[in-house]
Image (cartoon, rainbow, N blue to C red):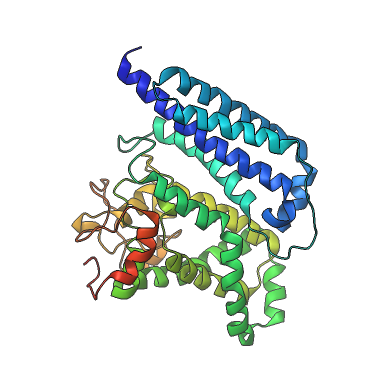
Length: 367
């Protein structure tokens, strides 16, 4: 094995071991403090399938040790490999600690959501992007650490963010609630409710998203989402907190007013989580017919392009119908060449991106 390949494999194994080790420690924390860290609605499901989740965790801890050991053997620097293995030891020690269930927590951190989603999405999309890559780029490309922090805030904090915006929405729109209407909506077939919630939420978020592009003050926040110059499954998580809160609050309005059933909401949230990751992925599939009906990576990549022909296009998150209706659709027979902002580039650090919009002077969109 030549030296360059050995170093490359050693670095990848070491970083992967470290990331996996962090996830194992966080997962063990969920087992240790389920009332505080685990999504309350999911607790019965986890308890019913405890053996399966324990097996997944044991396998992940084993992989942490194997990858860490490989990194130690391949690299002169042992830091990454030893760190991963050390995290594996911590996870093992936590495994033999008795869980603490207080039953007193009313709001949980949703840490389980972050751990499972990062693990499962990573296992799904990293191999897909390697096998069907649109652009040749590294797994650990520039800015991935920043995007991982955004992923944690956006996904692990989904429960707290949802709680923060749902209460104001309920208070403000309580006058619009018609309980008979909600009963009629909730009694419809789940597939019909799913299409309705998709149609309604996408209509609202289309205009909110368009506003983030066309109003300079809002654009400074949304520019963070567009600052990545390489697209992959993790890039979609790069989003400013103000952007996330306003967009999530807007989506709650039709969901709350119309009163969709819990099953529909769970289905919708699961679809949104996977779809949002997929449309940012570095995959080259084009879907000749489907590309006109639902947003695909090709469709959304044109929204993230810095090519002149694609600026301020394709605002819809799910249904291109809204873009076609309001004249903002763009779907040529070729892929965009470049991504990112045009006239400026926000900082790459996570804290720098959070502070960036508040430091900007008055600008024009894409200024």
